[in-house]
Length: 201
Image (cartoon, rainbow, N blue to C red; front, side):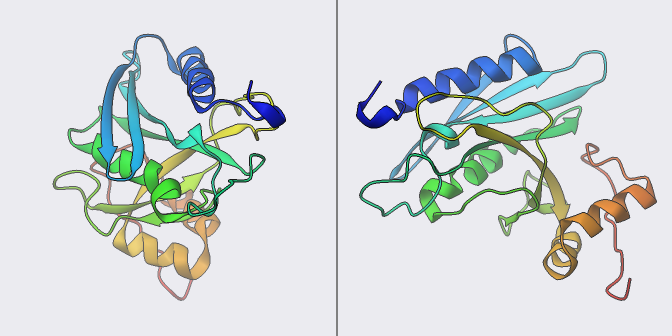
């Protein structure tokens, strides 16, 4: 273990991968996406044969604590996170978008938090109506990585349309979730209709 009680990035990622496999299933498919000036982000793909759900999970964001990427000495106790995204049946072309979202803390200094809206400004996959995600509470426990490092939170990234993203900016993620619930929306359906709660709700 490095001096000061901090943990090695490779040890963090190994712990997170083991945790994901324990909670989401064995033998995931795996892809890697590389960004200029940033470490590669891997995306794991877990398939639930019984339900048809496909869970995508990033692996790489949590290697370093989130915060100012230009800081000479990152705060080792700052939050760490990864992202998961669940779709019924899965889709082609999503891996790159999820990797871009997971790389945002390293590239842009973004701190991923519950309720946050992260907008790519382009379809999350070819032909998708969704251009952004809203981060919801993790569906699996946090990952304890030891040392003075914060536990890794695996936020669930839920695709949202341009209209829904505007609603989140105006009213917050909680009200959008309430609108989804009232309309009986299955947010894992890649072909779902958008909810337009109306700006006067």
